[in-house]
Length: 49
Image 1 (tube, one colour):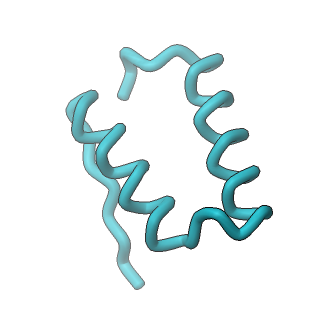
Image 2 (spheres, helix red, strand yellow):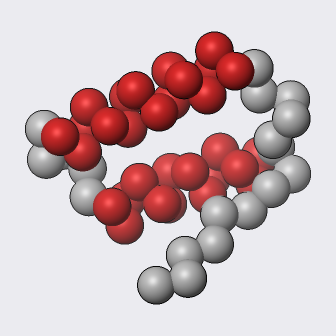
């Protein structure tokens, strides 16, 4: 994930928080979105719950 610029990460975080607060996206969906982004940049999101 080092290739992602800090500004890009902030934009993704802001968008996901907005979607969560407006009930357009649930936590499970957020994890799925983050996993897709992470995998594209050589990482992986792990849900330990």
